[in-house]
Image 1 (cartoon, rainbow, N blue to C red):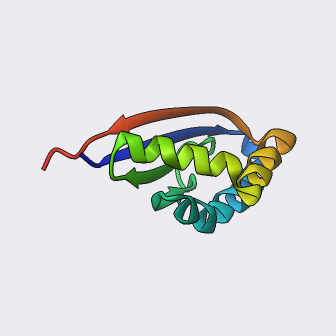
Image 2: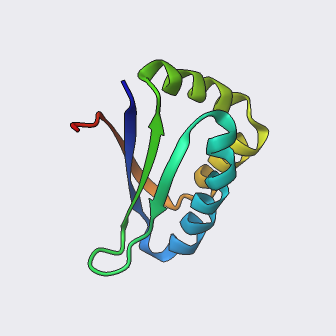
Length: 101
């Protein structure tokens, strides 16, 4: 059964540009590591602190394999470090969704 990971990010509103650069870098890293990146979304109107991402996997096992590959990917780990050092992500929540139809 396919699953989609919904990631909700709470951003520092003064560092949105740094998060956008971070999100763009995932566009090559995620597919290389086995995820099907649906996309990242930046705040536009309304709240200026919430961004979102959707990544689909064939199964929960495929997600776990992706996470293992991601930990071995130099570019992926560098992107994680950029987020830690830049402190532009204040909180991150993951929800695992399954399709209904």
